[in-house]
Amino acid sequence: MLRLLSALWALVALVAPVTDATAYVAETVATWQGGDPVYLSPESGALAADDADALRDRITGWRDDVFLAVLPAAAIRQGEGADVDEASALLDQLHEAMGGVDGIYVVNLSGAGTYAAGYGDAPGAVDVGRIVAREVRDHTLGQVAQVLEGTLDELGAPESGGVSLVWVVVALAVGAAVATAATMLWLRRRRRPRRRASGETWAGPADYHPSFPTYGDQRDTVEDRAALAREDVTRLGEELDAADPPLTDPAVAAHVQAALDAYADASRRVDDLTGDDELRQVGQVAEYARWQLACAQALVAGTAPPPRRLPCFVDPGHGRSVADVSWAPPGDTLRPVPVCRACYDRLTSEGTA
Image (cartoon, rainbow, N blue to C red; front, side, top):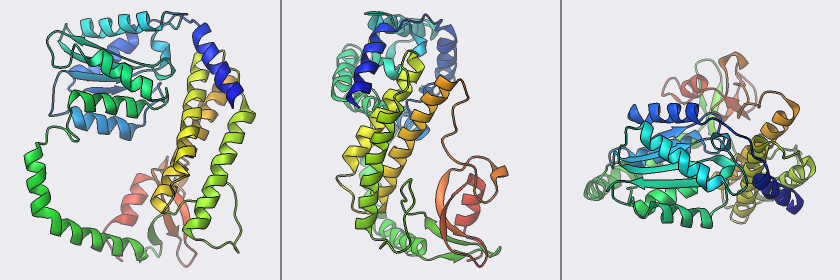
């Protein structure tokens, strides 16, 4: 693993492709000028859509002069000693393309790092560079969400866009009893399998399962599943070390770095596994690491990157799945399966129980 990390850092410093950033600038500015403060490039792979939504929610309704973008490293030329200069030039291009609008501009460039600039008299414009530098220092390259969330924290962004603290306190005070009752009811309904009119059975989100087979005589307790999760993360580390893809392409290097960061995150999480929620989170992080490694291997092989999720189990023709649920066809046994949005909505609706 150390050999892979050392090779990655050396190649980030040596590889120097020249890329025209005009297309990335145009796409980013079009999104910002359309009222969306967060642009997530589909080519980046450095930030999940849910994390982008969380950032967007914090900015919307709070300030209209804070702009975030997550772009691939190819948006700048990564020559030796030129990262900061190229990133600064890209930020200036974005500012100009926005018509010189004063504000806070923050750009993550996947494996090339996170950079920021403040323009004009916008609050925080003078300090944003130092804020981002501290966040980058305290996180790894792959922890993009944490860097951007921490930056918004330092700038004073609310936890959810535009909602005043007074209103939050009042809402919590008035709705505490109702929320508690609703949560208890939801938990009770979630644990009770429901039979659909079609004869299918839905029993809520699927429990965590490792990426390797287990046997029927194993006790299915949280402690047993936690032990299997730790074995799974250990196996993930072995897979990453054995893969050892060539890192001459910066896009491949960025995917490998993201996989290594996710592996490190999963390794930290396995020390505190107390329930299926934590186990599912470990499974998701491990799955993300394996997907990033698969993307790197696909680039090396010259094939298309794999999708993040499997097709819908109920009908692959429905497209990509969005969640894992405990499901059984009519008269059969419950099992964890991936389902598409339509099937998930149908199974979880308040129709025939």
